[in-house]
Structures are given as C-alpha cells and as structure tokens.
Image 1 (cartoon, protein in one colour):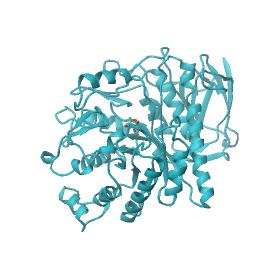
Image 2: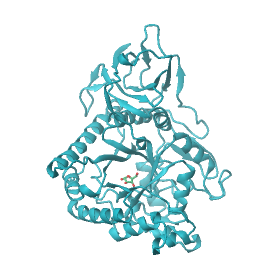
Image 3: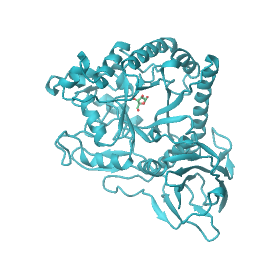
Image 4: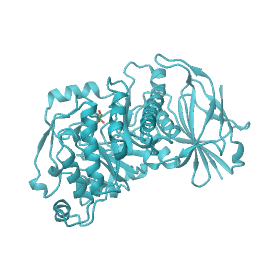
Amino acid sequence: MKKAKLILDRDYVISPIDKRIYGAFVEHLGRCVYTGLYEPGHPTADEEGFRGDVLELVRALDVPVVRYPGGNFVSGYRWEDGVGPRELRPRRLDLAWKTTEPNEVGLHEFASWAKKANSSVLYSVNLGTRGPQDAQNLVEYANHPAGSAWSDLRIKNGAKDPLDIRLWCLGNEMDGPWQMGSKTAQEYARVANEAAKMMKWTDDRIELVACGSSGPTMPTFGLWERTVLSECYDNVDYISLHRYYGNPNGDSADFLASTMDLEAFIRTVASICDAVKGEKHKKKRIHLSLDEWNVWYHSHAQDQELHKRAPWGTALPLLEDVYNFEDALLVGLILITILRNADRVKIACMAQLVNVIAPILTRPGGGAWRQTIYWPLKQASEFGRGVSLLAKIECEKTDTKHYTDVPTVDAAAVENESGDVTVFAVNRGAEDAALACDLRSFGAFRTVRHSVLHHDDPLAVNTEADPDNVVPKEIPAAAEDGQIRLPAASWNVIRFCR
Ligand code: AHR
C-alpha cells in the first residue's frame, strides 16, 4: 500500500467558500430544456410542464446558481422570442447548434423552474449579434419594479414582481470563431463595457461576468483577458473561464492529471486580473467565474452523424455523453481544484445539468437517472460549504504524457459551518493508499465517516436499467493505526464530525 500524509491546521485558511461554486448550466441545446427539464405530458410533469423526477434530482444536488440560456446559443438569441403568449412565439433557426428553437420555454418559465429547483439564475445576455441596448432592455424587463415599457410588459406577461436576477454574463466565448458575432478583444471590450454600464445604471445591485477567452489553448488567451479587463475593470466583477477535458486516446493517467492544467489556467487568469489591478492602481479585485467545466468527448462523433441525419431538428440528442467511473474521478479532481482556489473562484458551473454533457440523463416519457459524475458534485455541494483550508499533501508523484510531478493523492479540505471537517480526496493511483491525517489544532472528533466512490471497471456507467452501478458507499472509517485507506482509483469524502 502506498503512503500519503495530509496536514490541516485550523489557522491555515484559503478562503470562505462561495456556495455558487456548485452551480450548473442550462442551455437551449439538444435535450437539456426540451424533454430534459421541460416535458409537458410526462407522467411526473407539473402544471407548468416541468418534469418532477428531474427537479427532485436537481434539488438533491443543491445547485445555488444556474447559468442560462447559453452557451453558444445565446449569441444569436432574441430573448423577446421567449416571453409573452406561447402561441405567438416564433420558431427560430439556432445557428449555433443547427437546430430549431420552438421558444416554448423562455425567461419566465426558466425563472419559475429555477425557483422550484431552489436555484438563482445567472443570465447570459447576447453580445454576439446584439448589443448594449438589448442587454439593458432585458435587465429593465427582469428587474425594474414597474412603470416603464419593459417592466410593464413583464407585468402584462404574468410576473407582477421583478424576477430579480442578480448575476449576469456579458456574452459567451466571444473570441471563438464558432460564435455568432465573434469579436476581437478590443471590439468585445468596448461593447461589454458599454453594456455593463447601462445594465448597472438600470439596476445597481447586479453583478457582472465579463467573457474571458474561451480557453487557454486559444491564440487570443491572455491578451484577451488583459484587454477586456483594462477596458471594463470598473464595471465588471468577474471574468469567465471555460474548460473541458477528455480521454479520447484511453490514457487514463494523463486524463486524471488534467487538473494540473486547470490549476495553471486558474492561477494564470487570476494573475492577469491582478496585473491589471496593479496597472490601474485599483483596490477592487476581479474574481473568477469558471462558468463552464466538465468532461466532454464521448459524444463528439455521434453528434457529427446526428447533424448530418437531422439538420434543424428540435430536442435532438446532442452532446449526450454517457459518463463512466473514470470521468467521475476527474470531476472529483476538478472540484478539489476549485475548492483549493476558493480565494479566486467564486462561481463555477458544471456544464451542463440535464442530458447535454450532464450529471442527469432522461428518457422522453421515461425515467431520469444519475450519471457517475452526479455523485462527486452532489457530495461536494453537500459537504463542501464553509471555509476552504490549506490541505498539505505529502505523497508519491509521477509523470504522465503531458504533466510532471502529478501527486498520486489530491485533496481539498473544508471546515464546515457546523465545525466538522470534510476532506475530499482522490487516489489517482493503481494501488491503495494509506492516508495519515494530521489535524493538529482541530483537536478531537467524535466520529469519522468515510464515503467512497469506486468501481473496478474504469469504464463502468449508470443506465436507466442499472442506475446504481456506480454509487458512493460508506466504508468503515479508520484502520487501527488511524490511517484512512483510499482505495486505488477512488473519490473519497472523509468527514471528521464533532
Ligand atoms: O456547453 C457546450 C458549449 O461549450 C457551450 O455552448 C459553449 O459555450 C462551449 O463551447
């Protein structure tokens, strides 16, 4: 058995954890909305057509914020299409995903769904094909109490009270050539700053997320962030990061090391934010919104086929990655990385929530079930609230194809609001590891509970017929010598309870 050591000290705090790091994302894409969260006529549908079985699984995840309505979709979206009487709403071609959007679900419906899910909305405005005035109209429509054209229209459309959306994204992946209305850094920076000003002048309680580059491998990365923040610094609060990982070549060690890349990505963007802060002699700090992250690769080939067979369809099964056990380990590692960077990452959204690269899958007219990746997100959301602690890990390190010095065991630790301490740990290795925990100034705990997510087959999946193939299990907590056994290839939640 390998040996590992974890040292925690109550005085070594990274930061209070913003609960919005356990957010998710709903895009008008594939079957995320239609036959995902919305399916009138489904046996569990409520009076508004929302699937009760899906709502139940989402509520159990306890997702504090849900980004909506895109994604690439938003860059051509006219939000007015989705409000008012349903029979008058247009069907539109969505150029982002080559599908047809029926607009049966729009702003009011989604706000109502989010309320039922106990979540708040992170609304992305279209800064691709539209601009500051449309964004301002939307804030006025959603948040202004009454007495103006847009707020009165909201009231006429059935919402007497403001929808009270406090968090907004200024567009989506605007440096991507695949984006409708993509822009140079300077073009975007100007539009985003003007939109930000007008949106905040309309409602000064809102917070805004500026678009970062769509990824660290983009040629625009770095200079994009600097240019955007140089222009928008005073008027925005966060900058976005998007990152997806995959294992197309079956190199599991390299795949599970991908969070080394995420760590560097987060730290680089944080450094750019601070460089602009320095250049501008500002007190204010810009924080990070990792508002798209996940594993995404299983469905790529299938999606190309589907687009050829059914262009312009509605509710096509796009991006329906079926996640295996190994993917759940990477999701656990991503959550550990987010917690370790809780001083800078204040918002994070698993992309997405239902059917589309999602922790929940549904069958139209049938069941809803949890994918493997559901579990680390659920457990982190449940036990990962409070204060993020510095988790000093001593363990073996290895090299993979793209990464060096990859720790076999990675961990994050949280002092919960109750005074309990929760350790999230992934053993990346092929051998069990004995984890010695030195909790120093925390003193004694009454009980230690240990939940493990492990499967002997890294490719094991959950299906509608076998939904509990990969689920966490409680195991006896500590061996006699006080060490905690982390099985080979496992996600662990170890709770030291008062
Ligand atoms: O989440 C799927 C897509 O990934 C989003 O629409 C886009 O923003 C990103 O490229």
